[in-house]
Image: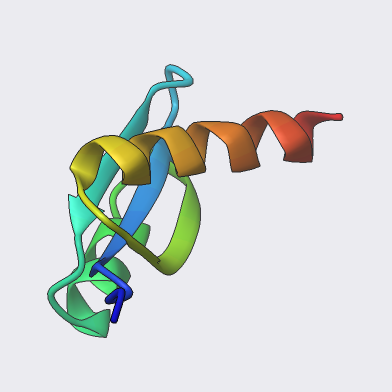
Amino acid sequence: MKTKGSLFWGYLDNEGQIEVKKYVNDRQIANYERLPFVTGIFDPFYAADIWEARRMVEARYKEELN
């Protein structure tokens, strides 16, 4: 049986860089939302590993730009 993987989330900073983090809890995300350099949040999602999570966030970001 295939597992869902781990939960990840990400954010976009004011320089247009995407950062992907392993999900710990909602408070972690809320803390980042308050940081002045964070311009967007990618909600938690499942991925097999950090590399897949990064590809997924980058694809989602490109899709939202169009």
